[in-house]
Length: 522
Image (cartoon, helix red, strand yellow):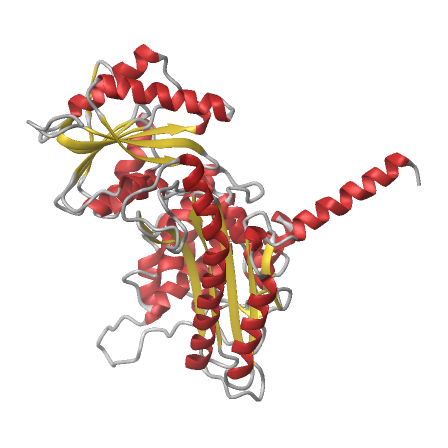
């Protein structure tokens, strides 16, 4: 073997080892032993499958990861991603194909739903008619939201939403082919039936590894052929929980009690180090004693075991980060799950989580921000609060107004523009967000901050959000940029609050405070 060939072989082995190495220095042997013990002491006939790792596909733990498990509603995440990726420019519209489906009661997607009951001459709407009426009015984004959340919808309508996504892809078989074509790593996701249809002719199944690969790609904005806007929309409907204390949690579970019963928990959680992904599936083997409640308990216990191991493995990195940055947020703990001491949020919900707006507060968003972030802020401040938005992109403001109206979020309003500057409606914002598109020179920093200070009531908080693209590359350049903004802020009377540093997608978010009236500067 030549020296060059030997070097290449060594490099290939090293790359493979790095890919297979468990992330976060997690004790894989201990986790495997704990899961083995959990399965052995449970009811007879429980088959547990699991994949846990980082979005890049490095497994921290894989147990029956390549076996197919009944996926129940957890597989709807794949359908939302495929439909949103294909039709990214139509998310705010009502698809004509969806209207046609709702006007066609003979389409197979409606067959699993009970039709109008026979009550003589009295007209009573059945599950099928109610679902058709509900879906007919939905935009593509709202259809995805219904299929994953099912908020305020009947079980029949919720599952009809999943079947409608299937129909937009051409049916179960075509949906499976589309997922395989998008990435070979998604080949373990198989659609064989409409939701609520009998499972005797085939079931919708997923391998934990394939579903984990899909979630990981969504978490790192790397689904092949999917635009950032479409990925952001998919994360918005997958979002399960958002807060400064607990961070952003994206989750979609599934459950079936018909034979064979199954339970699935899948999702990803984001922190300043990136994200971690989990898929935990359990089903009842033939002849076993396990039923729905037993499977639910087994999955919940496995989730808790995994969460504990991941938390322990990542806590060391959190402590190291705090020591290196010299910054710790009050009231946050490196042991919290998902791990989020002081630090940065990544993904669609990061802006609301950093801001941490409270009920009744008035928030001003200056500059570009994602639609779903602004809507999340509106939900945080509630009906008594207000989110005023100033964005130079009129098309984005129009989409924001449409989506806010469809969700009944009347507290979202556009700030009037006067000579390129926002004119805020009184009372002045008690909390403002600034998201400049490009780095500013010292004079520009002072001007931007001066306008921000004028918009704040005494004691108000501003969050200065600097996107990664706006900040020079390199650690020293980023630190210099941060010092420049701090100097401009202090010169104008701001006090520094918390700081968030981002591993990807943004450089930093800096919290600034305007001293209250009569308060001495510290």
